Length: 280
Image (cartoon, rainbow, N blue to C red; front, side, top):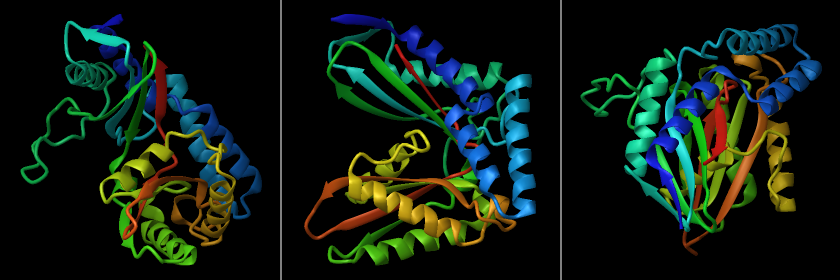
């Protein structure tokens, strides 16, 4: 049994939150540069250039990529042969978030109560998902997701016999309704199956996948490519000002579900896609 001091998790979370907000991942930058080389709209190309330059400036100056530094979602895989000592997991994660948002001068955007709207003033609590896996390591993935794109997300409970075309219509409608409000080019996370509560979780988990890496199932990978093509034909374009780059990727995750259900969730992400990972 391996012991991990809670403080180590705190330090890791702190580092990941700051890095996520100031250092755009290589896969996102690569996708943006690829989109720039293909974008047909002159306005769209200029916007993509500005987005890329913004990312470079943020990295160089250690400044946030966006003024909305997001709510922190942590996906944590805990090895079954690990024991956390000198503190609890939730306490360690939230302390790391608090330190990151104070010392990193990141905007605090979390309210203690959804109705009373009082700011917690340290961006806690984080949303924490845990999974027990084999081994003696802790794998931590942090996503700092802004509110604008999150607000454009949607879920629908389809009839079990609903055709794929009907699901496509719902996804496209969700993207079109989002328009400029989701700060395109977007990344579209889609969760299909499970239950009413699990489909959105699948959709968000799909956003953890590197851009350009498709679902391992051939038919799902093909579906991702088809949807990306359809979305980029909507003409929404970079920042909603027209063009051929509305989305950088479509990621689908599927899961078994009840014979009478077919939940589909769409979790939309903006171009400032902030995900970092570490192993403790």
